[in-house]
Length: 198
Image 1 (cartoon, rainbow, N blue to C red):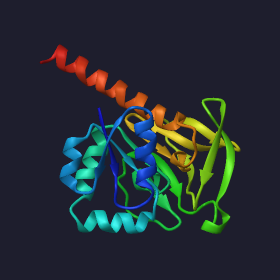
Image 2: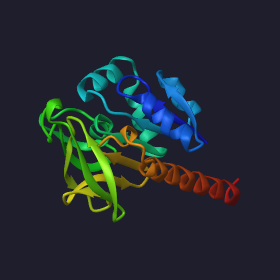
Image 3: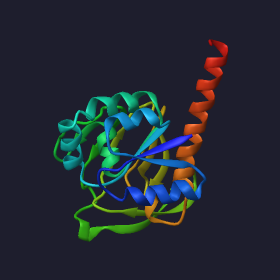
């Protein structure tokens, strides 16, 4: 199981460290063809507009969209914005694979970044918010896994996971463990399907 981390901006190395702590093989993805070498992908935080521009200018956008439609993909902060079907504050294009409306910079400027206490599957979890977006709407098929003050902050739809906070910036690995469980479950389903229809 090879987990790719989109290494174009943001603290992608922090995600690598968490993945390796959990025993997962990590590959930095900097070119579109590298997506062919990984089973799943993490899209880190950063600046969503700059990331979107880079992806569009380097023929990365379409391949990344196809990947996220079919393989486990996890976006944090700017990564969550990129995955959303609807982006506001202001509007911008996206990969359109997660049925949510997300508002950019909903928690304020970088100086207003904060560490908050939320819950993941009902258990307390420390969460780091940096110029964080907010889910304003989640679709009927979107499962809310974590909340902060009642607001959804970690959601899943099929093979896509998205967080508005930065789980890589704390010592708690539960969010990444949740993603790896998703990857393993999709891998098991693919194996069973192949065995049934070789």
